[in-house]
Amino acid sequence: MTTTLQDCQALDAQDPLRPLRDLFTLPPGTIYLDGNSLGVMPAAAPARVADVVTREWGQDLIKSWNQAGWFEAPRKVGDKIARLIGATPGTVVATDSTSVNLFKVLSAALRQSAQDRPGRWRIVSERSNFPTDLYIAEALCKDKGWELVLVEPEEIAAHLDDRLAILMLTHVNYRTGAMHDMAAVTKAAHDAGALVVWDLAHSAGAVPVDLTGAEADFAVGCGYKYLNGGPGAPAFVWVNQRHADRFWQPLSGWWGHAQPFAFTPDYQPAPGIARYQCGTQPMISLAALECGVDTVLAAEPLGGMAALRAKSLALTDLFIQLVNERCAGHGLTLVTPTEHAQRGSQVCLARDTGAYAIVQALIARGVIGDFRAGDGQRHPDILRFGFTPLYLGFADVWHAVEHLRQVLESAEWQRPEFHRQHAVT
Ligand SMILES: *Cc1c(COP(=O)(O)O)cnc(C)c1O
Image: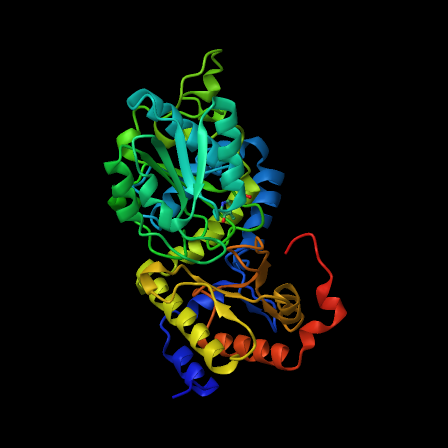
């Protein structure tokens, strides 16, 4: 039996998470399937940011460091993010970018491994990991004389040996949407004597994560994707409590000092995660990030991440089913795993030619996804669609697939204007 628009509208009418859509300002006529790249603006953000600028900064000036809670803001927002990733209070701080945070935790893990298991000098990651993660690891390895080994996902198990210091993985792959079993992979790496660093860029706010339960070691994640924190929002960093008395970071700026305002000439790290701050933190961006995190926390009374996950899977299942039913014969191949346990909150479709132009034609129709270039070998060009259950409905999915069908059937995507490459895809 095929699924109709009316079926999808009925699903929306029954959806208990539907009211959460009102927490966002979506431009009219837009079906936004790119919340995995830049989340939609929370409706509360403009007034909150304006208040930080005009009142906290404009009127109260430097007093706001104390009276507006600016000094604590990175840890306060970190504690809110902690609720979404299975972390305990006081173990997460919102700060810097994902790339910079990865540099900090990889440096810490390298040092810890060298102390506990000397003779291991290898970091293993996936060849298809997000490039910035690989670039940061590559530079660190070059500097320290360590070795970065890149493998395919199915080769990871064979690399868990006594040469391995750190397994560095992204939980949900940005190109394919494939998700690792965090607990199982972490345990296997620990059994091999290695530390595990997880990147949660496509997980935080998208899928349930239990860092504490998985006994992971270090984690970083992104603020502007599923946390809806705004362009360039601070990222976050987490360290397991069991490393609390010893973890370190190489960017030992004054904001990570135990007493920044004692102005002592020597560096004493702050207790706990606060030491992962380096310099003065961005208050305007943090205010916007907090609005974004609050949109995800607003689901807590409605079942929280478990309810968001159930809806996300229903949305991605529907998208896959409708593409199969309505877009067959147009050369699209599903890249994302159909198995729920292996799927993040996105669906990727591969096509030998025209993937970029098809995405551009969809964007012109108000259906915003993105394009990720292939490597000409194992990874094809893909059309990537992210699903944020906070603001997407089932009818949106139906309309998105209908637009895709029309773009393919009319060959609209072959128009020259859709082939012009932009700097950001
Ligand atoms: C989006 C993303 C990043 C982004 O890093 P920035 O430093 O914020 O630019 C890093 N890693 C992964 C896996 C990502 O998906």
